[in-house]
Image (cartoon, rainbow, N blue to C red; front, side, top):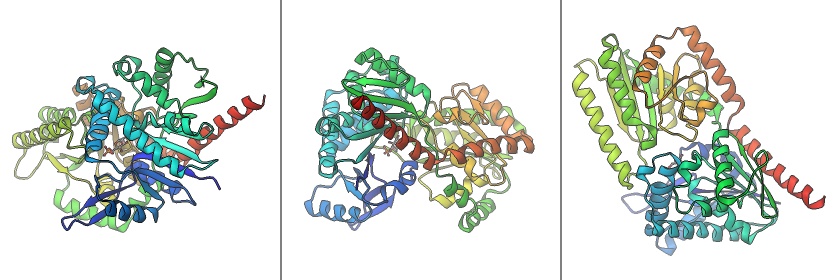
Length: 473
Ligand code: G6P
């Protein structure tokens, strides 16, 4: 029986060592982990990835391996040095800023690049132990761009899919990377290459054309003697999970508790991982301008801002945290009163029922990243609005803006426009809120995570069929 092998940098569980030195297994709450849950848990399917910590002792590795095996996962262990140079370094200090158009933050280091290749090879070696004829291998994201070609080399006929969860930048940004051609040929090892939007597909094909010299025909490319295909498959959320959580008694109990503490202010909600691509300081400044210019909203509206800890060993992220905290402090100090706190700020992650309560309670979701491959928070907000009341303000530079045109779309660099959008959202008549929310809910329900998995797998199967037809012609 053939199986599907999911490969990503992070496994859907995160292992942490507690104070007693024992391992604690936590579920990663990300969209990918929940979304692909139905895939890797079936039959012989398996998920290969890093468990999120450095492990040195053989007995610790064995313990983790056997525990993960019970839930169809297989770990790739990274050393401290690999975490620094492959994960924090090349992945998050080189590729991440370049792909999000923050080239001023990009570090160009051959040492990082060599470790990146070495770790991708480590993943390839691990896969060699697992791959059998007929298996499908589905690789995820920018941390593993050169893995598809490595597998292709040892398994020339295998079915390899690749999905990029972040933007693929325009050629003008991508060309700045000294390793640009190797990165593309790495990706081209896959048969089917998926992106969130058509713009990302276009950017990718244009770089392939200019740097590798392959021209495409409607996304079809001839890579050596093999046909490969690039297409847009926007990732959805587990819609029912969020809709059900919003009706769960535990969520409702949390909502009552939070409401009592917050009083009856209207809430504007903001939830992100700590990341400069999310435009958090810009959003805080826009909120400051909003309450500065619109006295009638003071004591009536608060911003609830949740920042989920992420990559805080990378200097740019640590600096950003300080900047956010200074801004929150200064805005609250300037405008707050005994009765009213303009901004409620929390730096931590929250369980689903708390998030769901926040989504339910908030009048507005302010999702204004400077760049975002997709952004799932805005989709979760929409799915949680069972009464259809509430307004989404969404950045046009998030991949999700392509699908959610019924949100109030803004340019995240235009502070005045963000301020106007907040006013519009808070004053929007209920019928309009409901009409917009209904349209968005319909499309998110239809293109949910299960539809995304199906479409991707169908795309991969189609390429393999087309390859077969060409061979037998
Ligand atoms: C983004 C990336 C993912 C990554 C996630 C969390 O969504 O596309 O690949 O797993 O951020 O970041 P982390 O560095 O903590 O894995």
